Image 1: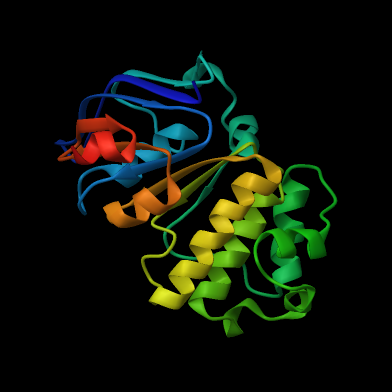
Image 2 (image 1 turned 120 degrees about the vertical axis):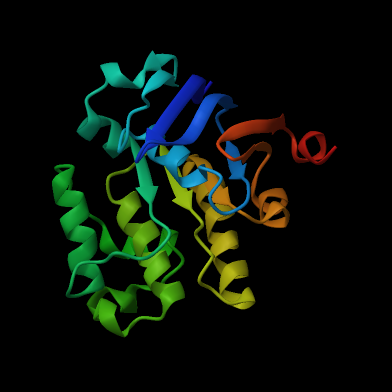
Length: 218
């Protein structure tokens, strides 16, 4: 099992965000679905220890995440946030920065290709990119550390339909080309059905169903 959350609870500002949540996410293509404010993004942050629960256990491949070094974990489990957050400068500069943190020398052209961009983007100023292009650079930057798992928080929420379809195609291509497991957070059950084999649905911080998309919808 890729991730297991067992009776996880977390409060923020005195208010419950996740309550007694038990979720299983296998290797492969996963989606966490639910309405805005249901705790989806908070759950995602637990998976690479950007947060720890108040109670309960988060396991990564059978090991309690609190026993793992956070930096080493984040090199293996990379999170792409909902809104692009790139460094000032060129696309190549962003990719090199991410790779150097992991002690790697990046193949910029390859990273761009896998992220769905051509090599000409390397010298472009990130401030001049569209939101969709910035999102692709964020994915390429996450791949610079050669992760085994990619966590994507609402990766298409700010995009039009054409750009959304393009990003979704990139996500599926990533899984098939490099074998990375994917966990996508989305409020859109239709998107979950396009991207995931396994779905966990949460509402108000509680699990309301998990399984195949057909099982969850039923």
